[in-house]
Amino acid sequence: MSKVTSLRDLALLRRVRDRIDREHAQPLDVEALARGVNMSAGHLSREFRLAYGESVYAYLMTRRIERAMALLRRGDLSVTDVCFAVGCQSLGTFSTRFTELVGISPSVYRREVGTATEGMPTYFSKQVTRPIRNREAPVPEAHLS
Image (cartoon, rainbow, N blue to C red; front, side, top):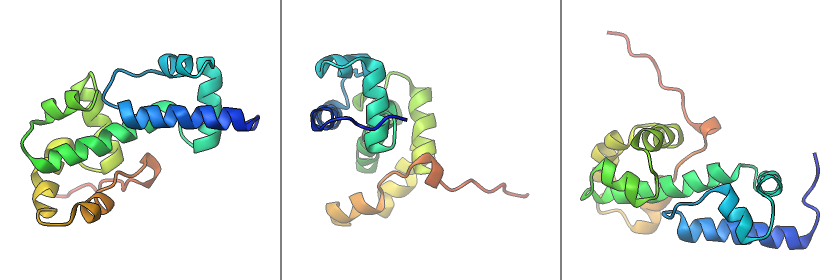
């Protein structure tokens, strides 16, 4: 494995991350992000993973899911509306990724967590509802009837 080679590359990677944070609801892909910092898509992908420990796509989806969680807690949008509002093009992919990161489906989250954080200060509700990575998500237990 190579290491991130220069401060210049680190600065460019930070620009990519900042762009994802700002424009997560826009159609973004690795090629477009790489063009924005004059890197090849392959180089950006390798260096981003080395610097941040996850792929560009995983980082983008985490930002989208965080925003989706906030919109679902508000309770005034359907899961489909939230999916498209955060920049996802497929409800199935959105629901799968949401469930992987959060541990429950978007509809269950909307129904259960939205009311659980009611009245809680925003800074605290953001902290306790932050999505988790795949490797941290609990494995659902089988229910015996």
